[in-house]
Length: 382
Image (cartoon, rainbow, N blue to C red):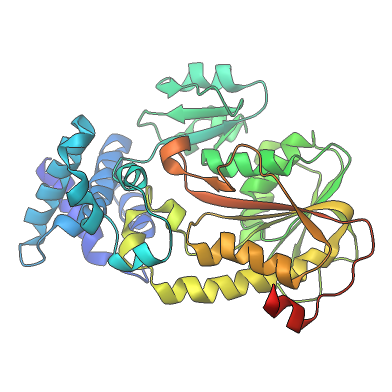
């Protein structure tokens, strides 16, 4: 690691905290300054910053920051060359905070997956994957999903002609899989209830062949403006966006063939590509977000038409936000039957198996027959 790299890494680390996440600081330091950083150098700086947080549990805070950075980079280099160089007994107490062990089922395979650099996944316009891979170079073509690529190069993808033309976008593979699990059909009407900047909206539209209608909503207007820009670049036009604050009043009286609730979550599933969050997330975050998720599910469920689907997705893994929450929903909201989430392991998309973010997906179908309301007493007993 040369002096320039080390200097930039230390500048980023000194500005990073819970309120200023590493990814945001990296963007500001590497792209927002007066002097633009070369893409190859920017990739190196980002990787060393992420290595620092992956190996944070191994670092002695009494040592100078520069020394800790060098040690973390060396640990990452050794692990990349031979993952078994770090024994299981060393991974267990240091890779994640101890409180995480009581919140989810932890395996050595997951801990090892967290210590590897995250892959950069792309989603290509249908039929464009081979062309995109050839133009970009440095790409791996996984067997599935059919439109996914893994990019291994150092180009600034956002300035390539293929990105500007809408031939591909950067999107985690498991985010792509959530759209495939929804399985929307051309001509249907869907609601992407927490659409954010529209990543999954774009997948849904592609599967629907730009036919039918997708209502997209978010509580932040700026995210919906980003969605509009994204849709224009990708040629997506079968959507309508609207503000929704998550309250009991839906953005439209329409009843949907499908509702996707990609809910706000604690993000433990992103800890592979966002290792700093391991040391800023708290158990209180998980408890508070589980209550928000339940509220959003209850408010979104009535908009599903009889026979339609409700899909709940979160990029996190704790029981309170995944399996326990799905069970709570079933006990408290009558009239929905659980369906299989294809391609998952009991609803989970795990980084050690897929190479992407960890996610949980639950799918329900709204029953067509009338259902007796569940009383509070009955729900408590079930």
